[in-house]
Length: 385
Image (cartoon, rainbow, N blue to C red; front, top):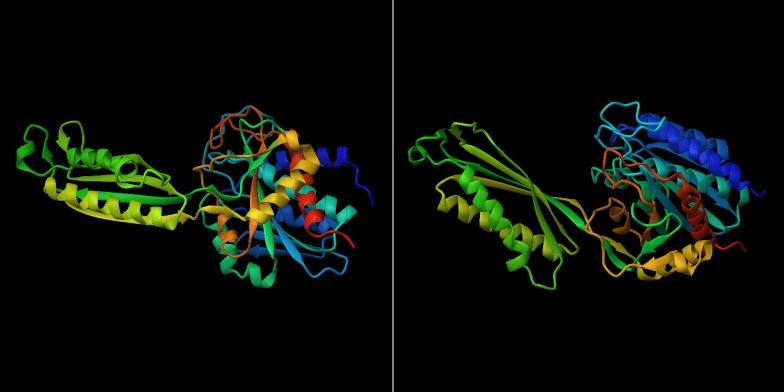
């Protein structure tokens, strides 16, 4: 059966706006998961499994006699950001909004599932993975820990993300490293606070904290090889002081980005040296923690060529680009690539507000391109006999 693409577009817009109006934070996507599962059952998939990794959903569609399986993945969670947009479908969940376009990602994968279920055109098995808690960097791990690979095996996986600033109908990707790891750190300095008029009477921590912050800026510029890519960003400096009281405790928080375990390890080692040395110099105690939240996203070179080919077939070569440099944002999809090869691509979202902005909105004009890309890569990788 040939599906009416114009009708499918209108359905995807309705799904996307419904999801946008009812955003849910990571591991709280109960309504979203139920919405997804209901649609997949309506499409006639062979199996729809829920509660995978908490609130994840996996739909399975089989056609022909092929014994190969590939997976397509979308993220479902929203962010704790109060929406400032004026759209009639704006968030009805105060303090939570789809500020990263996961509502669009989910709607596009649903569209692909309906398209493939109706038209087929492939030989094998497709797994439609709807993942929770991408923004935490915990959802993919939760699904993997719940046995998604063993229960719903597949040999390769594909995903996409919308890109503000890239024209609608344009795709970008690259082989190898395309998105960075994200590490989080916290350095706590503890001394003796006191009256602002008598700094010599104690060992206050604010000046020491400022010295740490400035020294952290030298990790990338002076302690990593010039050929290594890294970012160290301090995002918070918190103290227990007040206008006329010097603080006895200061907390420094931030994150670091890199594209290899070796660079991540060097950033951590240098950060600990700086924290220890500065604490000694200012006669305060210190404690440092360093956690790895996201791993680097590394596209498989051969499957990247397949994804580029599918995008060129869909949109024309002039609208598909190989980017020269990776992005320093992070993406939980990378966890799946630790186990199977795959490719992650970017889909244009036009002249929208940036991701994670309270006025961001997904451009519905991109929905059909994402759905058709998903279907195209399935038919390319699982060709019908």
